[in-house]
Length: 109
Length: 116
Image (tube, rainbow over all chains, first blue to last red):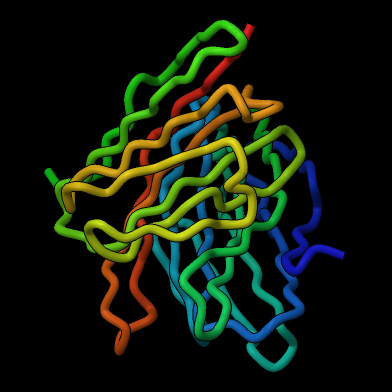
């Protein structure tokens, strides 16, 4: 079992829909990252969380440390949101990030 | 603007040849990382460096080598010993202040290597 599991693996929705992507992890962490990877491959860091909730524009990320779970929400989704969204955790006391497999999001006009 | 630059974006090599992927950052970050991404899998750590002239093996270091002669640069060489080198390679960096673990990682645009 992977230390970081994302769901769903693939998600297709219509423009305007509210999107939720989930991330569960099984280890102690010091921080959790949500990343966005566009078709060209480059990765952009969206959020880094260690507790609570963060919001940036139409994106909202939450984390529940006790339940070892985080969600990424997109409000009023748009075709330009189509990308792979990746959850990554930094293990406690470790240098490296452990990545989930990613969720491929497609927003149709 | 500060950031990480990987070059080239696409790279083709013949089987049996060594190839070096470039990663340069002007963020004054101490720590740099190389990850490999294969279809359907999460990114996996190849090598990382916390400071100049020092680097450590990650989870899948076999068939790869790195150097860290300058703070700004962390090139990755994919050697002929790497059995399945075709993949997407991503470089990242972050500050490495041990008392402040919650620092953000910055990623390059990646290099897609195809070995034919």
